[in-house]
Image: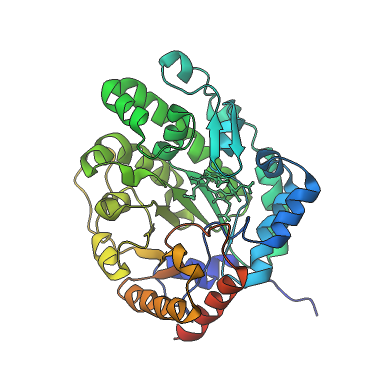
Amino acid sequence: MTSIAADPTDSVFVRACRGEPVEHTPVWFMRQAGRSLPEYRELRAEAGLSMLETCRRPDLVTEITLQPVRRHGVDAAVFYSDIVVPVAAAGVGVEIVAGTGPVVAEPIRSSADLARVGRAEDADLSFVEEAIRLLIPKLEGTPLIGFAGAPFTLASYLIEGGPSRSHAKTKALMHGDPQLWHGLAERLAEITSTFLRVQIDAGASAVQLFDSWAGALSEADYRRFVLPHSAAVLQEIGPVVPRIHFGVGTAHLLTAMAEAGADVVGVDWRTPLDQAAALVNVADLRLDGSEPGPARPRAVQGNLDPALLSAPWEVVDHEVRRVLAEGEAAPGHVFNLGHGVPPEADPAVLTRIVELVHKISVR
Ligand SMILES: Cc1c2[nH]c(c1CCC(=O)O)Cc1[nH]c(c(CCC(=O)O)c1C)Cc1[nH]c(c(CCC(=O)O)c1C)Cc1[nH]c(c(C)c1CCC(=O)O)C2
């Protein structure tokens, strides 16, 4: 008898995102594929390729995406790629420097610079499609999360030329030349939507829009300069698959990030999930300026402090139980860390967390 693989669109993870009943709380980890895993470090050393070259090799992407699913038994896979992959495909010279992050040799700071950012329709993302088509059968029903960087977080790398704590040049450009800012953000929104669309069409069961650094903005600046562009991305994708929207240090932005059109709002460790659940129960922003519809309940994702992965197990155990209890207040809860897995994390602790979440959240 041939076994029929489970349908990922009916998985515990997808149902939790939609606020439907689940047998247990699903769990996955941002940055679960990567340097915390010895098998990842071995494969990278063996291949001898840069991070971006690795992302363009469907065979390697498939193996790396599967590694944490095999090892930890997580409820979802996250596509191994990077937020700058589609930007590089659109012709921007960018490298990922180990220990630093994306570095852009010639930053985008004028309209002449903006002309160097290619159009989404000219970006070759066939390697993404190929990798996902290889992956889906190997996942045997485990849902795949596709992702992209939101316009603000991508723009910050392009304008600053690399990682920045203050995002000073980005903020100066937003306020000093709003027309150039909106032109750049619109171009990036198109690239991001295309990257997400390619992943969904190839078989991703959910997507996450990472606005990792949006927390650096005031709510007023976020609403004026960022929200319309992130909303354009999420609303362009539509409700075909659950849309997760995440940033770090966003306690003051959770309502606005939900309004962008997310089905699930990712929360860092600073805001308890019961408080977050109340903040995200709002209507979607209407991009045409019409009256907002009724508030809609949204699921939350998070939010164990990644720093605690190196605390004694009793601490982790206690914190996992607290996060699960606070998550009960939301219509749906996807367990995760409050940000990515640190490279020095002990993978055995992650496996133990998956087992604990599955055991104590049984309905
Ligand atoms: C801001 C951001 C980036 N990339 C990403 C974000 C948003 C998520 C977040 O907020 O952390 C998204 C990303 N990057 C990567 C993934 C893969 C999937 C997963 O989450 O497991 C995802 C979802 C692989 C990666 N992306 C990167 C690595 C590590 C480098 C390597 O393996 O060579 C991995 C596994 C590189 C990268 N790329 C970026 C940074 C900050 C870094 C780390 C730099 C460093 O400390 O070395 C930009």
